[in-house]
Length: 422
Image (cartoon, rainbow, N blue to C red):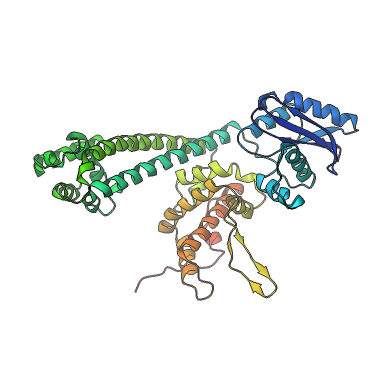
């Protein structure tokens, strides 16, 4: 109660600053037409005005949008001022609840931020040191490269479905086959997509070219069955043939982008694992069967230091994987995930599920139980979400307690029953 509250509505060159007491009475307000890095003078002004009204200091509050809140946090830390953040969703709900309108101005938003802070509807931002900050930025870079990687695959698939659909039928999972990718690179690269010219090579010379391309891409040896199927598909007339030449030229460029994205992705993932080693968390995180070092690093890049969370459930809520109940009187609605939190953390936990379900007996048994029980049976997607939340909870446990993952503890002491198909 000894500090006044400074609510700041951040923008590019216009910063609205208000100083309020704990009853949200505005003591002073002022607009500063400066960049975020020049807000030091505004904080000094706010501290001076608060001092004139008998306050010992000020607590600075803003919404954590963009990057400017981090700049403001640094300026506040340099002056020894407490710094908190107010979620934009909380501001939006409070704005609507004030007068049931969507009225929005910089002045009102700054006062609203200060009022929510006085009501303790705020939080302390994560204190990042250099190592955790590097892991977070590497995680963001990895996510960008994964999206680029997936976009290249989807683009090649769409283009081939248009002009040469037979090529996609030559392998069960073509984009996971190094032979299929190498053979496609030979077709679109060597002869510019002229299928007739590639056909004149003959099967033996085509297989030799594919073998060289597989070796160039770091593979050991090609799958000749797939190479021969793709060679046979050269005579298939299906597709928009008038677009083939131009489309194959485009496919060659996309394949180059794909190769570049994969190379950079491998490098970024290696750096993330190195940071995890530096934090001495690799052995603990990977003690969870099925969770790779890269998967653990991707999760921790979004959560930050897990010791800052008061409970494992708080991590699950942070990811938006906590169930949301709907009950009123005799009515019981269908529970759904809250969806609030960090979307990229949900994605990282979701991706970790696939590996864990293959090799982790505890999670596999839990998934089977949730999808086969008689009462309140879950769909596969719902069960996978439950497993994703379990991964976050148990990752929090092993890291905060500095203890390796124990299947018995993870199964709550229940015996792990293997389900054998009849």
